[in-house]
Length: 386
Length: 161
Image (tube, rainbow over all chains, first blue to last red; front, side, top):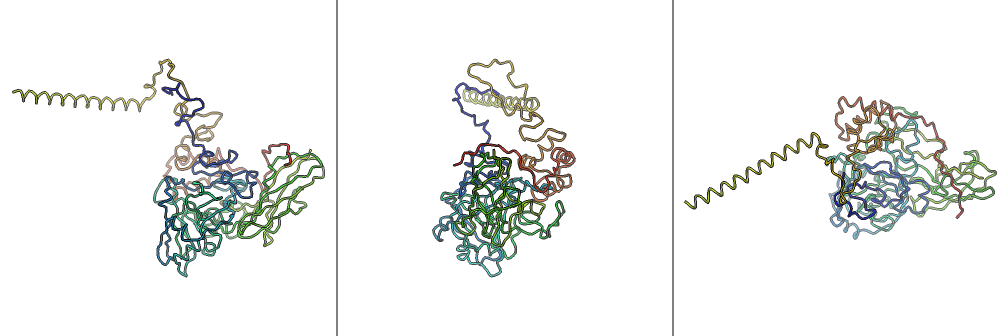
């Protein structure tokens, strides 16, 4: 093709028609982030990018089921409460929400239910997340329980289900890309927020601007983005991606590859115990006699971490890491250790966290499930001593 | 008399304008059809580039270009059934979602049925066989075992902080 007046084009200018949407620029993400899917947008971090104690936007994973909404007008944004178990249908503008209820800030671990899916054998269907679909940002908003108290809910309420402004991939306006939720017990926790800030600023568009439900410690799909309606249900919410095999695992363990009937699948709730070594980056070469300082984070859904251990001999022996208390409930905890190596050669450093119920991460893949959820096998980095 | 002449003139001029418009519409229609049938006939191949014109590659020139066995636009592997897959499987989601996945015939069929039942995928007709054959041939499941070895390690000397 020929460009008329091409000689007038300034140097280094890229013609609009030739520009691919650059997701890193579009969403303010670091170039080392990995795009798994461009429609819908899905992007994950690599372990060493998650080294910050509070995950900044540039390293926060993106998981979308549908198309990111366009033309959001914060001033006109409303959220409606309805459903069988609401005393009376009620709506609030975003401004009302912000002025009527007290604000709270928590660091909340949000992890995709399918984080680690890529390791399952036989392979599980969906975005092939490795380890980077997790983050712990600081979220500010109002407590859902305060709002629900104002709305008034009936005694028969069992579940909430969110509805949002994103569009189905087929652009069919009758279809919702995703509409999930949590039982009342989770909805009424202090830390369950209707958030309007992430890390002290407006939530970035791709993470749910202007309003996001945040349910820390549960699969990230329960933390609905662009939320404009919450239904209080007298049944377990039956919205899009609540049924069938979506965000469900077999109620009873199955052999790898086994077929599981829909009615034998149970909804994911609290995420399992897990940890990540975020420093150093895998592939470090150190000299003999030097100590290797490692650090990272550990989290366990609704529970706290009681211990993090490391092994340099493929799990034969374990040593304890120093572990910090969480900033608040549902925030990931930081660990560190200083490791000595007996001789030169190839090593893998493995980290294994244990929760307050005494449950540890497996060294191999946990129970196979058809959709590849809940892989919490211990994280490993490669190290050479020369 | 004069008035009548004037009126006649006006009618004539309107008539000629209408004729010109009509001819133009027909001409544009014919050219449009011809362009749809053979767009290349309309490019100015003989023109030497003037100083005002510079060349560049257009997406249209190599829309379905294949390089090293990869369909560049989508990233799909070249193979029998490629275009049926491109045309039916990249309307709603990107090709990356397909490429990431590894399934056997039974599970690809199951996935297509799920998309038809819940995600507005159309009936694939005769293409279904072609598509499934392409998928199981090019993206079959690979055995990974219970834990894979660490691969793609980029070694670097660690400078302690």
